[in-house]
Length: 146
Picture 1: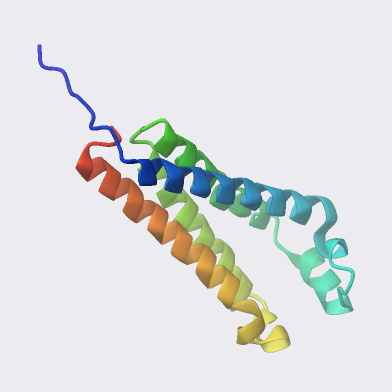
Picture 2 (picture 1 turned 60 degrees about the vertical axis):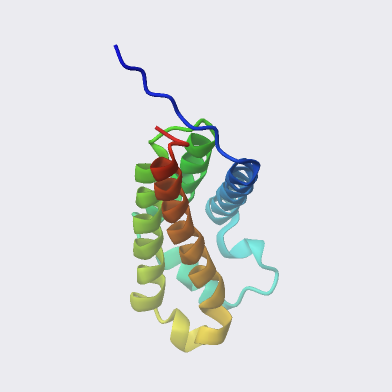
């Protein structure tokens, strides 16, 4: 009977997986703040901000949860060297696209606040999600996860 031996990942891989897990925890904290406080978490919230939060559709929070939860669970899967990291990261990226697609195409956020104020951080979040998928594929090709 043949046994499959996983390759031991290098230290940088573990360090990056830990950083991605911390990133996921921060995302979960942001989700909690979004759910618990909404616009009230910003002392400078305007009437528009309060109306924006009040008008978010019911599906928005579960999609947000899938985005941050998929990223966190995918990072944990990387640390446990599980092949589940890739589908979890894919769920996260899809949810990020849906979430920010709605924010930028389904609301007047860009017109109200401007691209310079609203686009950089969501683009960074999407880039991290793409990187997570790349890293999981890279790790699978190297035999670090299975």
